[in-house]
Structure formats: C-alpha cells, structure tokens
Image (cartoon, rainbow, N blue to C red; front, side, top):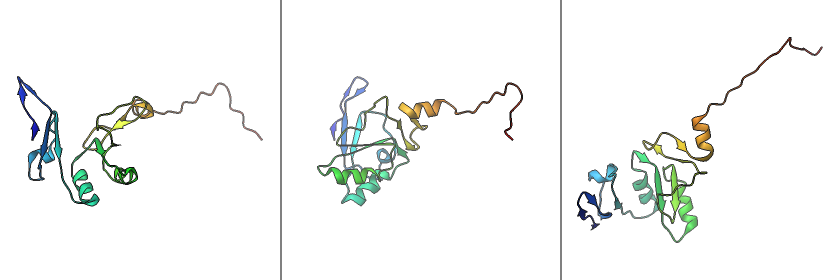
Length: 133
C-alpha cells in the first residue's frame, strides 16, 4: 500500500497492490481516492480482470505498443477507454457514459441532444389535398 493516511476526515490518495477477487474492494466501487493494482499474465488474463465487473464506466490501458493497446481497448467492456491517459477525462463534444451498471446512457455532444430530445414528425394540412391524376 502506498498512501492511505488520514488527515482529519480526508483520505489521501491510496494505491493498493495485491488485490484479489476474494476481496470486497475487487467487486465494489470505493468512491474514494483509491486505485488498485490487478496483476495478470498476458493480454487474455488482463482482459478477464478488466471485464470481470458489473461496472463499466471508464478504463485506461498503458502500453508502449499503441496498436496492441488499441486492439485491447476494443475488447474492454467500458463506455470510455483511454490509452496512455487517465480514466478521468471529459470533453463537452464527446459522449460520456458507461455500460453495464455504470450510468444511464451517454451524455455530451450529439449524445446529449439525442438523450434529451425526441424526434417527432408533425404535419399540417391547410385546405383540400391535391392528388395528381
């Protein structure tokens, strides 16, 4: 463990290594400044770890091989996946939302317009209709 000190009621950022699927922290969101290190042997094992959750808001993959990271990102079950960047990133024009039990759809940019509006068709006929013969 690195960090984890309390200053009053504030928990300092904490990094926990050695977290396993038998631990409560493995399955639940901490809602605190806590990150866990999950270790796996190879891409398939790491994908299983990443996808073994009921949540899927945001993910990050760090790699020197960006082509490999992009291939993995396409298989991670999350609404957002960043390569070589933090999981917290927001741009107003981009959709933001999760999959599984994370979120209620996407917000931001075109996704917000689609989410908060309803496409309708309204017609108005003034006078008799003309039928070509």
